Structures are given as structure tokens and as C-alpha cells.
Length: 117
Image (cartoon, rainbow, N blue to C red):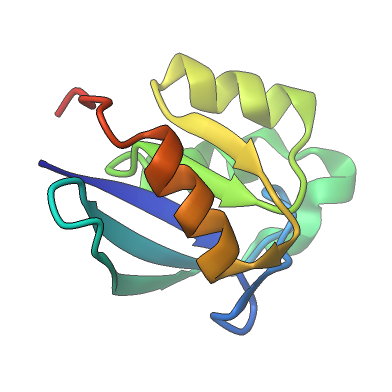
């Protein structure tokens, strides 16, 4: 069984993106049997700087574009975006620091969880 995590990172090493203003998300696929985490895609969003205005269309569009992911991992996220992700059955998580450290924690926490397809 595998699941996908969208990780907000500008450099592919550190989680440093706010969900609303973030323009760069690396998509990781996690194999629950082997614990292997592979980057499968890099998604770039153009309208990331609208966070200050909390542009609903920007946030909704980003959520739709990440709807194939079961988790979103970012440095920060606003309450409205967090609620919208949850309503779409996407788990929002926050962490600031190295992607590898965060992925290790996520893999341990979600080792036996089965995500709906």
C-alpha cells in the first residue's frame, strides 16, 4: 500500500512553504511495506502570493491540484485552508525543518493506516 504526501518546499530539502503562499510542492509516494519514500513529482503554483488576502479561489485551486495526496506537509497553514483540506479528506500537517526528518516521523505515525483511494 502506498500513499502520497505533498511537501511544501522551495529547495526540495527543507519544509519552508506556507500552504496559502507556497508555490512549490514536492510529491512523495510512501510505500508502507518498505518505508521507502520517493519523490514522484514537483508541482509549481503561480498564484502563491495571494495568501495575505486569503484568496478563496487560490486556495481551492491548490487543494484541487493536490487532491490525489492523502497528506499535505507545510511549515504553516491558516485555519480556513486547514478546514478545506480536511473536508477533502486530506490530512494537513505542519513542520519546519528537514524534509527527511518530517517524513521519518510521518512514516512512523502512519505505518499501519489505510488511506481511502
